[in-house]
Image (cartoon, rainbow, N blue to C red):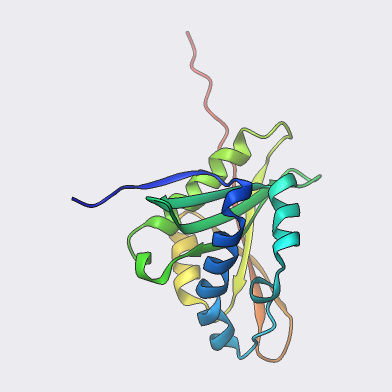
Length: 167
C-alpha cells in the first residue's frame, strides 16, 4: 500500500531537495504574475542554508522525497511569520498545505518568544492560496501594491490562548 507523508524539521541534507521543490512549486506563481524573478525562483542554496540555521523550516516527506516545505519565525513584535509554503504539484489538493501550515503554527507556539498572531502573504491572484489560508482561519488585514501586476495580500490569524480550567 502507499506510504504516509511525515512532517518534520528540515535538516542540512534536505536543502537541495527543498530548493528544487521550491523552484518547481513556484513556477505557477511566476507564470500567474508574469515574473520569473520572484525570490523563491532565485534563492541560492547558501541563503536557504542560512534560513535553516535561524528559522523553523519544516518538510513533508513521502519516503525519502521532500514533497512539501514551509518556513516560519517569530519576530520582535510577537508575530509568527509564515513563508514559502510549497507542495509538490502532484501532492496538491490532498490537505498537505493545510497540514504544513498547522505544523509550523505549532512549532512557532513552542518558540521561546511571546506570540500574539500568525501572519503570511500571498499574491492577489493566487486564489488557491487565499482559499487555503481562509480555511485555516486567516483573515485579510491588508493589501499592498508591489507592481502593476502584483498586489500582496496580508493575512493574519490570532493565536488562541488556552483556556484555564477552573478547579
